[in-house]
Every structure is written in structure tokens, then in C-alpha cells.
Length: 136
Image (cartoon, rainbow, N blue to C red; front, side):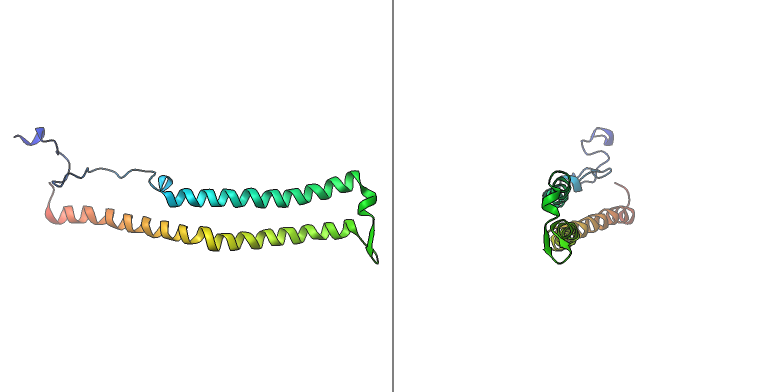
């Protein structure tokens, strides 16, 4: 059979296709999808709590200023305490974000990164082996 009519022309003899690797393999990986879902879910909850607290403070100060002017102790009013509480909400949100990333996202991302580096190293070795043994 002539070489140009072979079904594996341009491919290595083991039948694996030659040519460029698929471009977006990481986006279809299940671990990558789990990272996206976990990140999106945390973002939605954190944003709801943070923005909801700030919106509550703004609405109370707009529509119920007498409630926010209630003294708690000394010269500290409920409005002042809630305003300072916004900093606490943001600090807790930032702290929970770092904990979430350390526990849920970073281990999966490290595993994906290691797999990508392993795949790149394997792809880099293939041309070297083909040069060593000659072109098919």
C-alpha cells in the first residue's frame, strides 16, 4: 500500500493523532468547574451579606434616623455602632475569603497546576523522542 493512502499518514504508528493539543482542556476539567462553582457561591454569599449590611445601614439612616440616634452608652449611638460595624463586617468577609481560598480553592488549583505542568512536560518530550528516532 502506498504511503499516501495509509489511514495513519502524518500520525505516529501507534495511532495517536499528531498535531496541536486541544486548546481549552483546562476549562472542561471537573476540578476547574468545582473551583468556579465554589468561588461563585462564596462570592454570592459574601456579597449578599456585605452589601446587605451596608444597604440596611443606609436605609435605616434615611428612613429611621431616630432609631440610629438612640444612645447606647455615653456618646455612642446605635448609628455610630452600626457604622463601625461595617468595618467589622468587611474584616470578617476578608478573613473568611482567605480561609475559603486556603481550604477549598488553593488545593484544587495546585492539583490542576501540577497536572498542567506534567502534561506540558509530556508534550515537550514527544518532539525530542521523534527527533531522536527520526520522523515517521
